[in-house]
Length: 125
Image 1 (cartoon, rainbow, N blue to C red):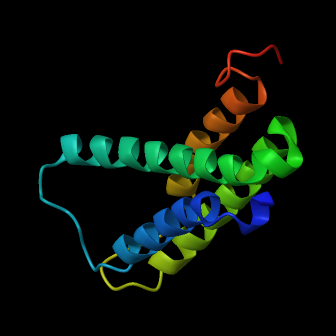
Image 2 (spheres, rainbow, N blue to C red):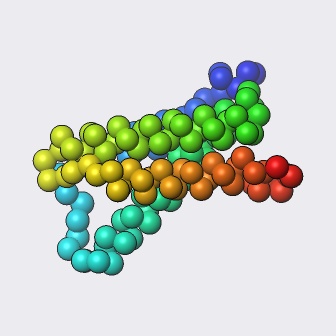
């Protein structure tokens, strides 16, 4: 079956994007834990966008090859991060910031670099 017809490749990144959208639409998720909460939230954002990049790479890798797939996965992920920050700017009690977009993009970027360099498979770049 062609890769573009395999739901097992397309559903995971779309499901993660839906989950991100859902949580971004919540007025406030703060627990009041101060700096510890702030740092942990930023680490979670970094990780979730790294995972989103990995999932998009997995969807594209069979048809495009690992290097092109990594670039396209990064572009989609960082674009989605930008739209997520924009979305948050319309949610009461939330705000979108360029810093959060940079954190999300850094997670996606690190994953894209790892995938592009072949570290995921142990293959040479």
